[in-house]
Image 1: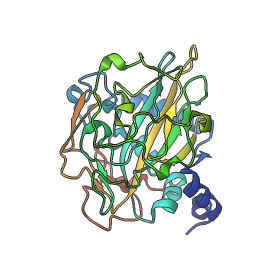
Image 2: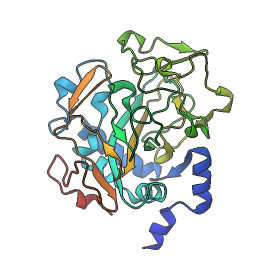
Image 3: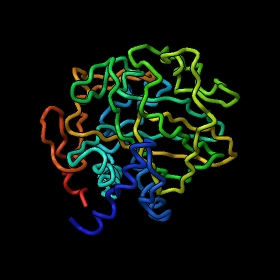
Length: 317
């Protein structure tokens, strides 16, 4: 174990804060100049979907967020980011030594875009209708732990251009029932106003999942996560989180979320296709990536090389 590795791991004080509040950050992963260089190159490569895991005609069949999934599987710089030890050592401090990355997502927000409504995710059945992750012993109607999300600011993330918001400590109790169904309607995109703030959920109304239909998030306890490009926040997906609308004139906000679970978690159990957000993706090219330690269970599909046939071990550093 190197001195750098020890430095990247969460201290006991940081772990206690994380356990109590459900998040930690902002944490600097790259300098602004490093982030600019990474994103400038990766942005060009993302435009080429010839090696992407999901066919463009299916993944982009509607006004959908699903086309943004898992570009780390074919864009080398994004795979390098997924395996960045400044991230994975901290994640392993929470989840244990053997960790998988099972999904990544881009979260762009352009001038005029609405905010994202308050939500929590445990099994991620919220839009697809089927659990996408299950912890050992967890069933669809039980409260598990969700996933660790690392949300990295690829551009500066400000209150004006739609930064993340969280409500600390809310990860201990689910306010939503993921066995319920939400109705997808593209007319809801950029048309919803809630508590005076333009907020939606990519064509869904997340309030349809509320356990108590009269309950409202404690907005007064919300914390805005302003981040400089190159910084990240680490949080449980079961933490109440949202984002503000982009009210700026020209500022484009880009976030990139990497999602991690212990190897003991079953990913996409009994599922070969995900249908949500107006799109449908087959999972035949999908695979989890060992982000820390080793796969000690063997019950998930593990990719050994990227979809560009680059050995994943090349990206570990």
